[in-house]
Image 1 (cartoon, rainbow, N blue to C red):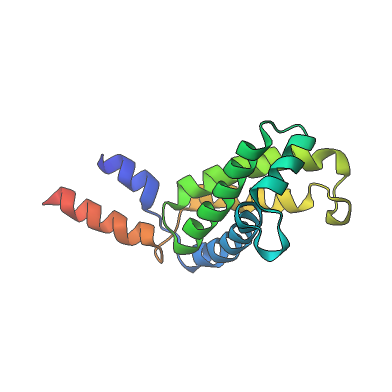
Image 2: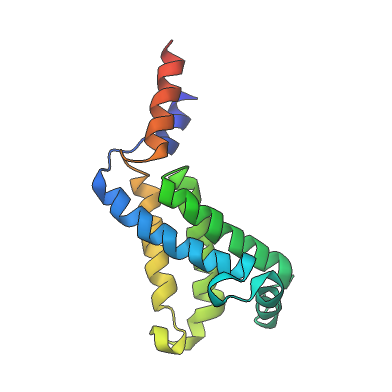
Length: 152
């Protein structure tokens, strides 16, 4: 159990983890809120689900729920540094699907809905998988408390 706690929660990263986690988490949470709640000009679950079904991601509503939840809740988790590695992993997989299923045939650049943006988010979330939440995260606080409890 100690090894699992250390691999999941403990990280030697410092301020660089915060600098990466917070803006990436904000971006993901904002995009997830568009899918889930129709905030910030989004289409909500119904509209996003219809669009996902139209591009071949079936069932559309379930895919919208999964992607929106990964982005929103995973994004909030990244902002807080809470279960950073699992949240980053879920979002990296989400970005892989977006990159290859949605954006791949549209070229590289954002103005043509190409892979540029999904690739940037995939790179950032993958870096966070390896980096972890860092010393300034809830992961660090929880990990230290759990390890102290195990030592008692």
